[in-house]
Image (tube, rainbow, N blue to C red):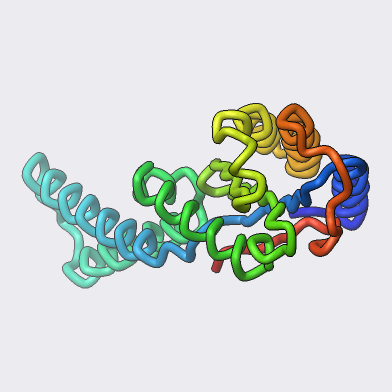
Length: 210
């Protein structure tokens, strides 16, 4: 997802954004929030059903003078193609999952990263996680209690919008950098000036979600 040059650019953006801030910003990007094994099976089942329906309708319109052994192979072949699409084709996966399932998975993965990577365990409780997931096209900002007390949830909207727009164009690194800058602006506007503990480092977190 990120090249070495991209990682260096994001690292520099975090370092610059945190200068003079009493908060720590952690950018994070995942390919997807969950393995979603159900999309493989759902797509395979749907493709099989469509193949059966197509064979039936074709036979009704015009009898199929094809050996039964050949007809039998069509359905599993369709299931195989459907399974491949359900596993590796993002638009198909999004269609099968639906908004609610993706929202739930994104929220759950963001919370896991927040706690597993220590964003919620700084001494000053000043960690801010910007979590972006590419398959679901979603961005979540989670802030620890020291930040939540001063920054309203809606203040993160510009950071979320910046990351979402850039990621939609395939500019993941640009999106992370813009989101970090917008988050820093929200923190400064809330009066969180000062010096953070620099406990979390400046590197972006990456994951495939599988």
